[in-house]
Image (cartoon, rainbow, N blue to C red; front, side):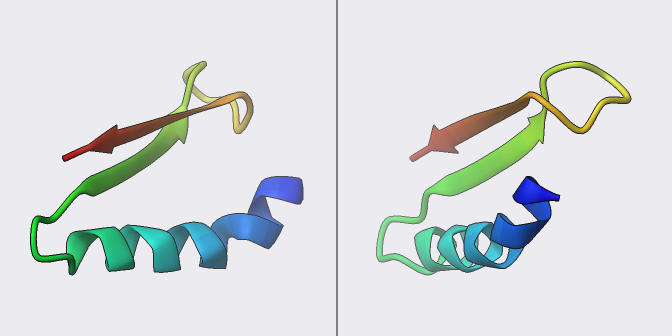
Length: 45
C-alpha cells in the first residue's frame, strides 16, 4: 500500500516533466515481473 499512497504524486510529477519546454519522461515499473515491489524508476530527458 505504500506505493499506492504515492501514485498520485508520481502521476503529477510525470505530467509536469512531460509538460516542460524540454520534455522528460518518468517511467516507474516493477523490477521483478509479476511483483509490485521493488520498483525501478527511470528519468529520460
